Amino acid sequence: MSGKQKTIRLRGTVISGTGEAGGITELGWVKKQFVEKLGIHPYPGTFNIKVLSEDMAKLNTIRQAKGIEITPLKAGYCPGLSFLALVDGKIKGAVIIPCVPNYPAAQLEIIAAENVRQALSVKDGDVVEVEVYL
Image (tube, rainbow, N blue to C red; front, side, top):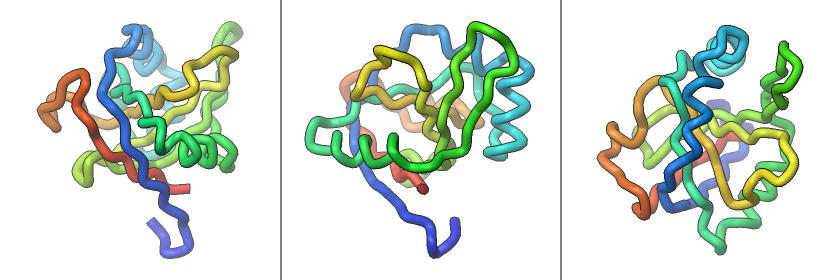
């Protein structure tokens, strides 16, 4: 990460996702963009957190930032903004913010090359910190 890059640290509780991300991260065009744009060969699925209420302003700052766009190549899929990130100071990954209506305001999805939940030995309800690089 360059010295000029801004870092935002926020915390959230680990939550289970809907299970849809596993299929999405395995789509060829999605995987290709994660590799080319973020340098990440994604583990199938995402690691989800619900951002703590005291860090919601930080999440809103991230949502307003210019991220790396993941562009859909097929109809029926939404674009997403992504930012490189570090989970609990150990796991390199990227925050993915889907640009869809009614997406849960406090939810944050993270991709990584490994299963983050297993690598950190965390379960639903545990609190983790995420450093997001703008």
